[in-house]
Length: 273
Picture 1: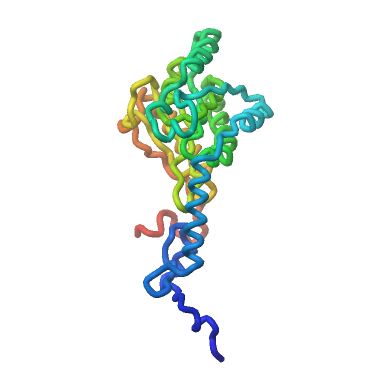
Picture 2: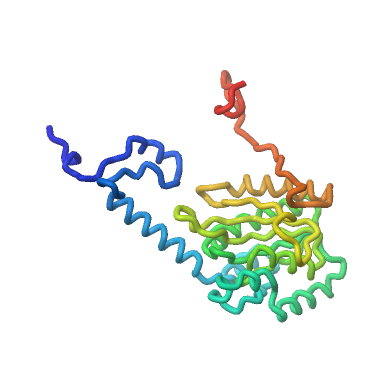
């Protein structure tokens, strides 16, 4: 019997079975020296998704309503970047709050003179899609961790047109000892909704990335909410104990694994012994 597939100019890649193990673009096949039409169209679709994720407006009102339903107070502020075009062209403005926002937070802080143990910030970053999809679940887990440790937590601060460093200014104004920001990461061609968590101890304006710890690729196809919360709790506990964060605080959290069944050796199957 003849196989109609043999008439197609597109040839499948011999390693195509590996595609079941990753969302990366591997083993796409070829048509002569080019990609098959299906793979090319899929690439263009993924590129469009990534562009849309960058420009999708941050629906902070919807997120605020979700948190209000859980009795979680929020404060909405804005960076010094007036709009998305300015934000994309002037990263420095996304790292600082607008003058009105600083005054808003300062007024709130005056009524809470003792400050807070932890400030939690949510910013759109380069993918508000990631924030909308994943921040509610992560915020719930962060609240549970803080409650278990007995830490006081500031209202969730929602920042429009914000970058990672804006969290340091938020925490400094609110007199928070630690801060974690949930922010949309730069979209990849297979991950337009990747959420990043950045944690800083003793935050203040002027710190650079060496003072922060990052947990990246939090999404359904990447790092799970539970694993991200597990790593974040380790970092926060160690930072509280050692009074530091960043390059001097390594992520040595023990990764939880499933119990090995009878006759099954536990551990990493890639490493013998």
